[in-house]
Length: 76
Image (tube, rainbow, N blue to C red; front, side, top):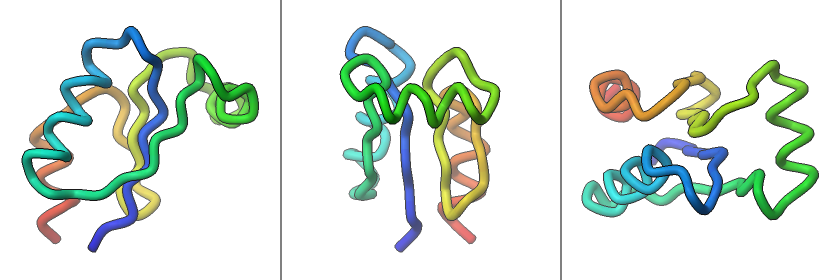
């Protein structure tokens, strides 16, 4: 199974859509909520990102909820 990490916030509709997508596909993931976790926020900013979601699938970065790109990465 792929190693999936999503940087998100509580109020981001694209984050919610991505997490619903993972749930529908039965994909487990680690959520790093930059709204409540200052360390996660620092990690995200150090990568040069100011917005969410930022998703990593086995180390491959996906900015935003790009369903097609996620499908490619998850179906390797």
